[in-house]
Image 1 (cartoon, protein in one colour):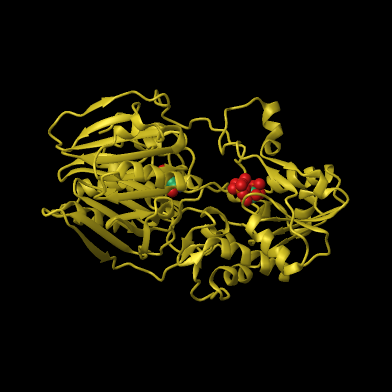
Image 2: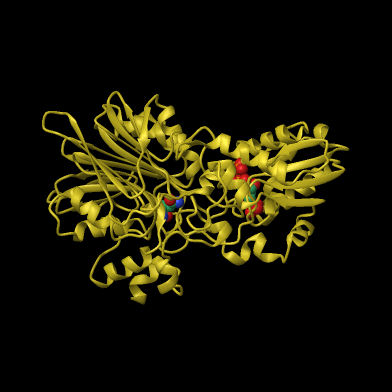
Length: 524
Ligand SMILES: O=P(O)(O)OC[C@H]1O[C@H](OP(=O)(O)OP(=O)(O)O)[C@H](O)[C@@H]1O
Ligand SMILES: NC(=O)CC[C@H](N)C(=O)O
């Protein structure tokens, strides 16, 4: 197993051999066992998910994986890791921080030889932001070494973990993702891929998972298809990644989406060719991609579920202008998320689009722990008003979503300070009433703006705007998929708006009083 405090590990593929790990990185070190303190200027917003990338059979596997992860950086900024395999050994580099902080260094990439690798960018949903939870996770099993990279969250992860620990499992992390390794280890099936499928059948929730063994690259998507996962190809070599933008960055060709409930196994054969096998899970349900991928998470140039994300967001802005028009002089996006919808709103309404707010791109998603005084500056470090555009104008501010309302409130104040005559907020998605359990880090339900105020007017008063309107659920469905929501069989996952969760929430039902993974063994 990889040492928790080290970043660089060379791992024997033969489980009888000694593991040698070196502790070389600057961001390694002692890890707290329980919640680490984390501060983010974005802590009020919905947080990212994770991104995965894997490639088999390419001589530049690790470099291509680093580039793919760089394109997926928007999905997780806490940590990044890559595992590769070469001539009998697995190699691992896992670091806190951004891909560019570590994987642009040729010396780091040299530590990742081989033509098979998988990588991960993390924003935690279960388990603290500490090195031992950084993925890919690796274990030596009876069938050989196996590494996994997981985007999503298991809704029965706590329950499975409790049973595993009760029966003697020694967990190395506090991440939900680790249960997959234990389930593979305990499966009685013969091959690593059969064991993987066996394990996947026992987890519930949202997932796009990549796994690698000495010869195989395996990809799996949850039965509902909540989390996205696509298959591509470069120089005839298979690639799997969260979004198509990770294929574009390396000039790879998109082949198809991994289907909901599908496991694809690519394996290097003795003659050097690569075989591809697809297995469909028996518990497949109609596909329901997460609507929030279109609203906020995915990169606008990505194609998710066959739909361009930018076009979906722009359509949302067009529908918003139709549903909630207002007399105004200028349409201003809340950058970056609100920009495509604001373009759509401006085009549909005929009101000029202007960059009335400038975003500083050098403010990271997470930041050094500041003093309370600095923290109070909050959003100003990220956004500033462009007075020349705003002064004396009636402004329509367009954002993609409101979570706690903190961004809107601060920006309305900023726009008024810059001399706006009126400020009207238009939000290109419905009100958020319910938390997510599938890989999006949401605040508790009682912290959501829509649950704190009795009606739209009360919310508007809190934010300090002249008017506030949200896109309807049908308006969003039409923007993304061209049709209204089918209440009997919704086409997308949309529980944050509707409360309609597409899977069982086992942990919520059974273990609602247990919040901390790290305490499970003592609670057992
Ligand atoms: O209501 P709140 O709790 O403030 O959260 C909502 C805000 O958070 C998101 O933006 P983010 O800060 O992630 O910036 P981005 O659009 O540039 O990604 C989103 O686009 C909203 O602006
Ligand atoms: N956002 C995600 O997809 C997180 C993956 C996993 N649940 C973790 O916390 O590491």
